[in-house]
Image (cartoon, rainbow, N blue to C red; front, side):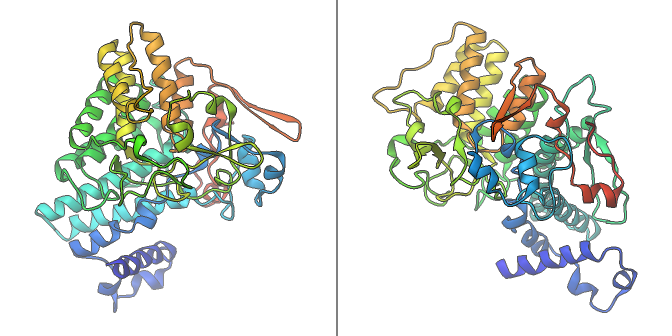
Length: 456
């Protein structure tokens, strides 16, 4: 299966590479060998976790405020573009050689595969339950890629400007000859919501692997999307539906805080992962050099097991993150039960359903605190409840690829979060709602496609 997947993926990527070559396009003799046609072929393409599940961008996390680099770590960065990303330079910040520079290509490779699968199912008139399942998976993977991309390369969703703000290049067809055009932020989000909604009736309630989408995964991504949009009623409804299908949590009381990576891989214990994707490795958030900011570490009280499960103190006295859900240094970016409970808690608080908000939060925290020290929250004030929940969201979802998106949406709503970094005595600042929250699109993409760069 793995060999077939790799062969099919290579063939698709070759199609991308040679799509402009007339001789290649006119070649007929081995066409059946190059083009997937069966449901087995299409499922094999979607089984390629190295592309479909492992390409989430690390650029947002690398730009966020949960970590910092010492001056010598910064100077030791190999790529100038990584240094510019770390200091929020307004210009082009990624190159094909940089540790985060291929994020655009990885995003659209996933989208291309999904489009090829969806087009192949349609052209080959494949129907039935298995065909529906394959189609549903492709829709979820495509939506997840667009949702990931729009957090990086577009401004925060603002209902007053979303119809004119520049969003993603919305490609829904594998034909590489179709001109690239940036859609608006509104149109991009509308299609993300449509893909996920269309996928739900096609998907099963369970899957053989957390890397393959289920109904819970689609509902969870819908909840995440609606939260970003500020549609709290719909975010709450979708998060609750996702939890109905997948509600398990890891009890941190049963983990070994002295382990290098206390939270084991998903095939052992991490059943709270509803849909697994992971961030592509980045030199900036390399767990050996990225130090946790004191502002984050000091949020954890004694008795909060995350303080020792998530962090280790190095010989230099600085804390580093070890709370991955993979049993090694890989960082997940997908949907977990913990994120869903935090969405339920936040949305209930914003809707002034304080009893429901505290119930959701306490359900999570009782699994994160020393069982002998945990004291349940009881909310009587909406603002206090929101502040508590947002702090818990930051504490729980460290290095999940969500902090950048959270800062953007919270600043849109008036939270006035200013980011600062100091390098070699020079202070760099990113004020709320700055245009640089839409990270520059790779220069080569702009040159080849002619699409407009993000405003500065």
